[in-house]
Length: 155
Image (cartoon, rainbow, N blue to C red; front, top):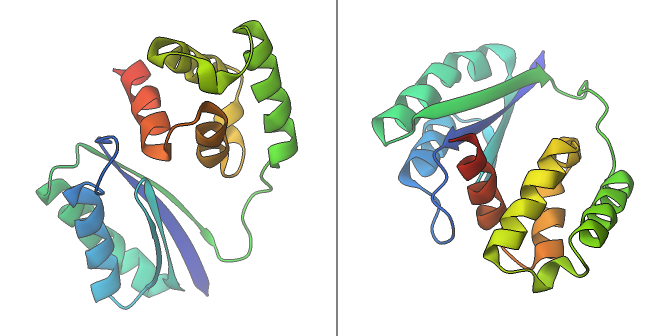
């Protein structure tokens, strides 16, 4: 049986190169021979169940050894992921927040953009597939910045 694991290492460091804990966790998965899709804010790995499960401990160790203070996982049987929302509903939330905040989200100052992210999170916007990318585009910032704003709210 093949499985897929998605993991995110934290803290997020904002724009620029991915944090060392993220790249170290990726390298642990690659060394195990898993199929990997790396993003600066999350990584997906796929392979046979035993190989993926055995590798997760190495991923955690590598992340923690290189500065991660939290690692979040989601593991599922490949091809059996839970249905995700589509971006159509997200567009409605973006329009709603833009109207509430007075117009184009791109023109907001930093504090306004942070407020927009907080409102979107409260309304479930980040439950949508590829939401960070879509929100970043609407705000005129990078995904790293969106995750920074989200991370800041949780502190």
